[in-house]
Image 1 (tube, one colour):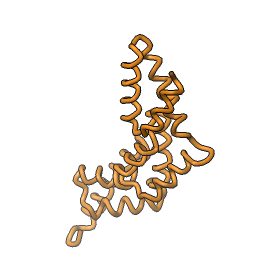
Image 2 (tube, helix red, strand yellow; image 1 turned 120 degrees about the vertical axis):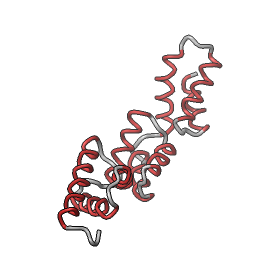
Image 3 (cartoon, helix red, strand yellow; image 1 turned 90 degrees about the horizontal axis):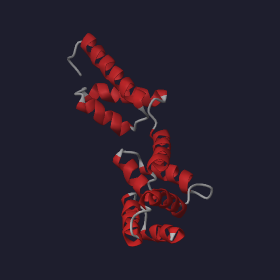
Length: 163
């Protein structure tokens, strides 16, 4: 922003900061999500960098915290598998070590068990398929669990637990 009047620079920073606050008010975001958002809003990269650095220092954005909270949301609300969670967090631009830490926290020794999660989801979904022939219901349950990223082994164990 060299050659830019100080007032104009401050206006750009204030606009970027205000937009970032509003965007973060909805839910936690990853650093990349915020950077992409500011880019879509045509905030100059220098202003976006300054705001992101300030927000990271202040704790408004924290990719480690985001990875854990977003993974919890996806497990509890959407029932995604470990694999699907990893893909979603990577899509959000979260560093690999933060993803590993978050997933280990949820699927570690005392955490979620992938087959148990698949079984619980299958049981819940199967309740809405009670009027279908068994082979058709099984096929639909298999597809449902595959879309959530579960392995064939986890799906097989979940279906065996139901049938």
